[in-house]
Image (cartoon, rainbow, N blue to C red; front, top):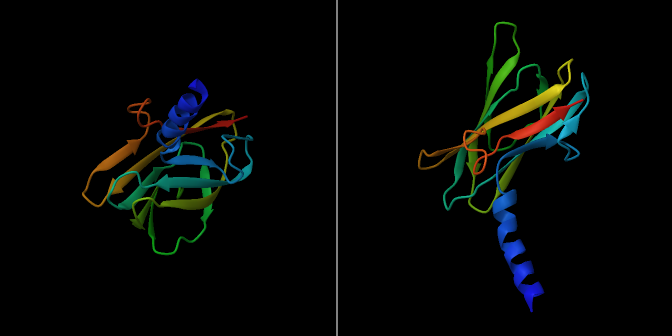
Length: 148
């Protein structure tokens, strides 16, 4: 009697718990090696009844982005620092309701162990922005990658 109820509650909570912008290795891991060249994927689901129109990624300090996979239907703009390193990436395009996009890029991990904190800002067609940056860790957590 209680098993179906528990299963229903767990399944109902699953999309909420899993639905947010996340950065993982291409293999789906939240851990990588010091100084390694790694492929990362940024998954962005549209969680509202309106389209996502822009995704902004702040590149964690010490990470060096080396290349991007093309993303049809999106334009990409980069911000770099004085050394020419990418510090911010903005993709503009459309992710419809009930869809997600996956942005792939290659990077070289920092030379020292630590945690990469991925700050992602998702803009919707009404101009609202959801900040996946730990400003509210319970509702909008930032992805983290342990570099060991």
